[in-house]
Length: 199
Image (tube, rainbow, N blue to C red; front, side):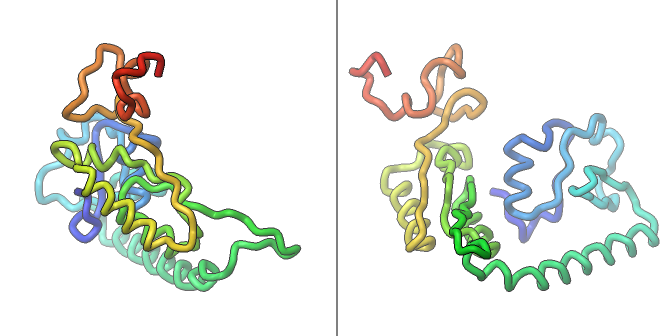
C-alpha cells in the first residue's frame, strides 16, 4: 500500500532501522526516519519538512539555505546514479573469471524491478508472508500463483527462492490466534496438516 508516487517520505514516533517499515521504505527508495519521540506533538499539518534518511534527521520548516543544500544533494545523487547505472548491466564476475551470485531479498512483488535495475541476477528471498500482511484476509491459491508466476517469468532465467509464509511471532495476521506466537503455530507449521503433530 506504500506507493512511491504518492509518498515523499516517512517519519514515525516508533520503530527503527531494522523494522519492516524501514526495510520497505529503503526497498522502495523512500526517505524514512523512525523512532522520533514526541514527533506528532511537535509538527502541525501543513508545515514543511525535510526527511533525511541517510543522516536519520527530520528538519522542520527548513531555511532557504537548507533547502538549497538538499536540492544540490539530490542533484549529486542523480548524477552518481546515472554514472553507475552502466555497471549494473555488467555480468557479476571478478577479474579472474569467478562468478558471484548477486541476488536480492524482496518483500513485495514491485521490488523486483529495482532488483533488476541494480544488477541482481535472481531473487534470493521472496518473503511471501507480506501477501497476507499487506491486505485484509488471506490470498487465494490462485492469487498466490499469479504473483509467484509473474515474478518467476520476470526474473527468468534467473532463480527465485520463495520462503513459505513466516507468519506468527511479530507478523500477526487476521486468521492467527496463538498464546505464544514465537514458539507455537507459525511459519511452515501454518502450512502443515494438523494430523502431523510432531511438526
